[in-house]
Length: 293
Ligand code: PPS
Image (cartoon, rainbow, N blue to C red; front, side):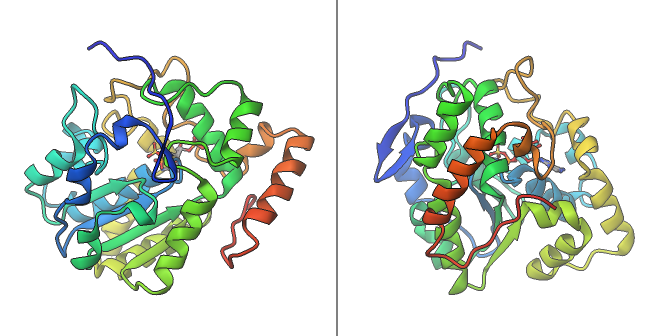
């Protein structure tokens, strides 16, 4: 299939977006959520795929053992706002889905989410990752993803991230927006990528208790084993290789899976400038991130 030229970034109600996430806007806004839907929300590159995979295993590995072997993850966990010619839209996939629950991926900032999720009180897992590792991961992703705007060189990319001119807008506004929302909304579980790396079992227990699941210790062990970075990287149904717009010759989708890789990318000066700017942008929140473990 012929991949169209890379899309342009434009301002959409105050958030930088591309047409692949806005062209279906009315249907996204009118999307009918269900009380048993589970939404996994995150800024790009925070570990959405990891949590999607874990939830799919928790809910479906014993019901349909083949599902993980033959159906790509992006079909098992449709991407709500995705709309690209030649591919099924996220909304259509979800409307046709027969699984219960439906596990749904989104990168929408909190103010853009379809209101039905709030009306139906669906459960939402938000995953957040520290800004420095997020921008590094996003940079490599934009290099290899032909459906993203051209990333340019690293230093201009970093500047653009600080200015919030990325697809899905400002990292700072995204993580703060969802953080504020969860304070008054018990159906949002706010997780951190760094915690998932440091203590996967504890975070898995948090997820299960939030979702009302009580897997046996044997199935928990299996989920953790399958969701290890190397195992996901080797799994064609989870590693992005089934996705036609990703160019693995440039970079893998499952790239490093570490906390602190930013140290291999930021110069000393970039780090100082970034941290100074970060403190200004994050001074109005009690949200805290770890950039090293
Ligand atoms: S996307 O494309 O925005 O949905 O990306 P997302 O899935 O949110 O984030 C991709 C990063 O998560 C890493 N990842 C993992 N890390 C540790 N363990 C597991 N199992 C795992 N699965 C995915 C993935 O490698 C990306 O991070 P980087 O730093 O680029 O490696």
